[in-house]
Image (cartoon, rainbow, N blue to C red):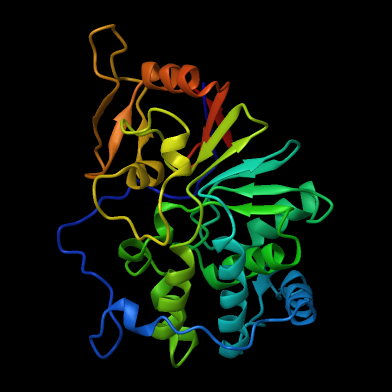
Length: 307
């Protein structure tokens, strides 16, 4: 059985003209991976978290306005460095106990993220698994990713962050995140590279309560057991045909045939990864001793749907 969590994204395709990101002087991305020597303290993280939770005001038209409290690029860089240290210690396949709140794409919708915490409770009183796509499309990608990273710093066992396809450089340099950073900071291009270096350490999947497998995209024909997920290497910015790409990009297709002689996987309309049918889900659940597959990546009108 596949659960599809709410996503605000539309269908995307990988175009042949997409370019590998670089710094402003043309140097490859690796040349700008510099980590600040001073790591963000718990006190600094807590103070900034409080500011972010209280940065919403109401304008004269009764609209919620996100006020900018993220103006110190040095603090953000040190937050990235501290967060990266935590992610490096986590496994590629997370093991998470129940109960836990599982959330789909946020896509820069900061007001929606705060609404989730308001309705379900904040860490550390509630535990969360977010399944990627924190950035792009929406107006406040920086606020979204910074609040989640600060919560990860302060409560690492209460909040877990998976990678989505928009945490890949080829995507977030084209769908808004890089532009947002360059508009807000003089050295936004270098800050974007540091964020991308962090994203390359995000886990790809999580097993919840030993029986529920969660990922941003979907299943892979190369995934025959959970060890295939445990042995994935990081850091990585996947662009080739691989398990990593499938975990970020693949989609279920309810119209695919499920006969005994039909293939479980087919080409995706996105131009990358695969579609998979019900038989693929049943096979994965049987091979990995699972009850459910939970994913995000696609829009569902009722916030959650079951296939």
